[in-house]
Length: 433
Image (tube, rainbow, N blue to C red; front, side):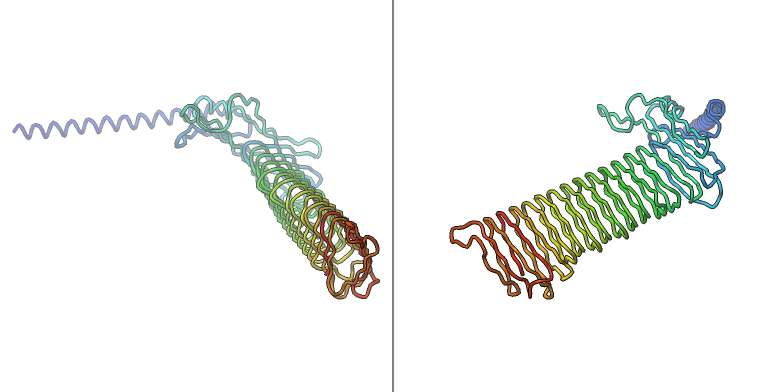
């Protein structure tokens, strides 16, 4: 009997606990709903027109969000201007004569009150004035630390993410500024001006002849561009598939361009190197970076300080270099080389070359001439040697004395005539083959 009484008591106790838990759960749900409703009521009053807002709890940190959307009619002459920070811009083109921007805004913080303040601090200004349609992110205050990390063993977080999705006609001009985030876009026929800081820029086909791209501390990747000025500082590199005409200014980053159909002006300082698959004509200024050029169809003027340069094939070449090793595959036109230190090697000089001039100091010079190449030459050496192969005939015209450190040579390559070769070498070596 005592055992039966104990069992009944246990069952009643368990039932009471279950009821209590059920009541507590229902109470918690009702409270959460009430909080959500209250928050939504406040948002409807305080949020500017165009915004909607939600409250959600992440795994670790409080998060609040709101959205913005706005559409404007767009004529062909209208210019779209976008300015954003702490997020991203994604551009999509469509056939409608209008511009639509959807913005998703999220704020994160360890502090419940702070996360709402962060969200309230963000507004999207949108308007049309004259021929400009403008969308701009505004953040009134940026007090305190931003980002996430740990301090005294405790993790902290104060972040916002503001992501734009833009729908626009492909023919309109577009200006974009993005700080601390990426820009992604497809094809565009209108003029483009882009500035990205601490983020990446990715585009497909930029068909206009007026494109300006500036990226700092990020990566640039463009599939094709008609004509552009590109500035890249720091970051993970600049990659362009095909360009008609390009002007590149790069610092502390790698540059890789597959095909330049027309002319290119490139300036690079530091970084892991410059690689160009093919280019018509090239004006290049490089410091402290390796250069790898496959085919230069026309002419090239190159200035380089330090590191190495390799050219597989070039028409006419004017190279001024210091502390640089230059390796030239085929020289198909005239060559002018003014170099100090390291070495110059040319694998083949074709009979299209009519003038070859080399002025070298502390430079090893090695030149191979095509079997059909014919030229007269003058070689001046000072503290340097001169060696030549079977197709070269030479005689000393001055400095033949045994103790002389300076010598002048004249002679012929092949049958002579046809072209003129002049070499001056101080403290180095000269080799003709």
